[in-house]
Length: 286
Length: 323
Image 1 (cartoon, one colour):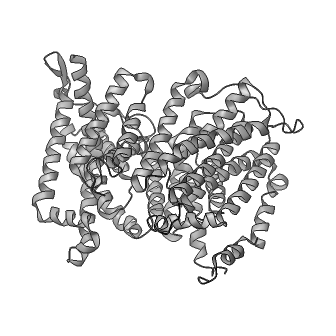
Image 2 (cartoon, each protein chain N blue to C red):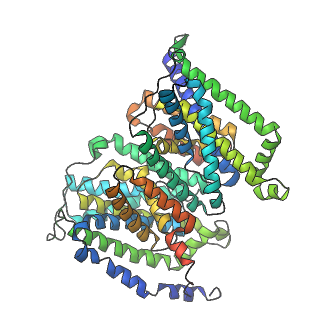
Image 3 (cartoon, helix red, strand yellow):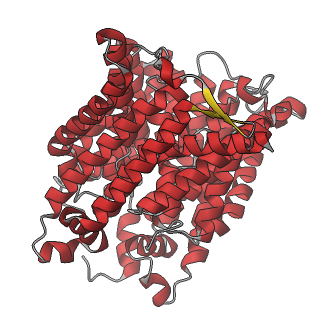
């Protein structure tokens, strides 16, 4: 029984990582229908920023997290201005091709700058060890992850529900043309959302590397997971992304723990099942 | 042009232009001019066939698939496994590989026909990944991550062996590609092909005017699966090996990139995309073995920026359409 709760806990912590990595994509995809397959490249950038600041400049781990957020957000703003903005009116196939091209370039750049080896991540001492409660091991770092993700979720939900900017984003998601007609600057709202979402991916990436490692393959390897979370959760639904990430994290962990010979079979099965039942995702409206 | 009756419009499009004939003649040039590149030419022909099969569903029926490698892999593994345990006659293996992929395609088409948009993409992706995981765990049959060992193919017609230089391989794959192209051309310029384009343009209106959209989708999806299976069986036979990579997400993504690069919804889009992508990859990886995909990425970005709708789609803007 303790083992079961342990798997549940670890899976939930893993799910929270997936949530941080994917929530930005969910909102921007719902808003502009812009298919950004390069989303995980920002997560990868966050990871590399953390590793570099810690290893080369000796920054403490916690201080690198905001830096990862800022770096990913800044780069995404530049790319949005230079490249992505021109592709909003293009077809979805062109958007896929453009952003896949960006992924290729980011993977090659990461390999060029940091090499293809796994990056070493040394967590600070206060994150090693774990809390034992009723025979279940609660690793401190995973507790920290879960707490952070919950705080981010609360911030996002509050920001989206109760601020003026949040109302503009919701309006743009519901009906982009109507929002423009009402004088909402959808392009500006989108650019900010895009930067925030990419920043969150960078933040999630720097939290993820201690659990899942970091090499240039990251941008591709997690793309599938992020797409699964976004589609299962439903577009532009923070609660949906949260639930989908939790379910996927837990089923992935449980699958690998109890039936390792099946690999990732279980989470693909869960995804196909959910989408056949609800094509718009668990919380999606269209 | 818009007012011409459909059958005249279709008939006008089926005529072979001199450019097309020149193109197909030029595919024979590698035999004479680039004999050391025939293995690459074989890979290109197989990839072009694979991309052509994706074009049928994506370019014409608007079904975006991120799991098309499933059919490629089923064709490859069927041909490979049968050659290992039963017999190695290439033509019959090719037919059986294609048939097996067609059966899988027909079975999944019942699911595919009910979904669109993101759900469709993710379901095709999920089904492809499920098959990948299944092949990975069934290592007693497929060899798992090590790939299938012991594939041996008899000479074609009992006369032409599949040699190291790829002469037979390229001739064989090129012929298969050409025959599949004729089939695709026939399908696309038929009333059925026109109905598919209707589904692509407006999936709600087609059923409303009485067209059985879902039956059309099932049909074209099965045809595309047969073609993809043929491509997979070709690669298994001409390289005498099958790896798990034939089923991977990477291969599905690659073929999607190749098709969009060349121009989806155009018969030559997949073929042109395969030539450009594979030659670019070969050249870049020769110049810069570790970071070649940076240049591929740059190529993709540049194409979207300067030639939207793929290379053929971009260039089509500069030339007036033939009536």
